[in-house]
Length: 141
Ligand SMILES: [Zn+2]
Image 1 (cartoon, rainbow, N blue to C red):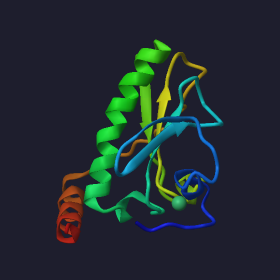
Image 2: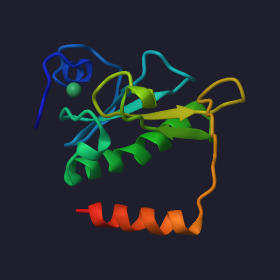
Image 3: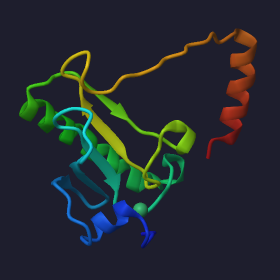
């Protein structure tokens, strides 16, 4: 598994920096975010070091993906907040701060707490959709 000795999350995985561990499996670790947007804000990360999600191998992604709903269910039950967001940022312009893939589970107890989202929706035309589909499908592994 790749690791980066200068990475905060790799240090947490290695036990060099403590965390409030929620759960783990073979490929993933979940722990409380120390700068929470709301009570129960939890991070789920792969144990290996990858910067962005598209770099993560499928078996590792499956391990991370299987942990997310389990942790989310526990956070919902523990906080009593049934509404929540899953957030995953890739790259600094996309608001990624720690350059190690991570998913945020963020309870949304009310309008003020939790995640706020800007959603500047455009429109997808038929011709553009067709051209885009051809490009994306051609790039699929
Ligand atoms: Zn890392």
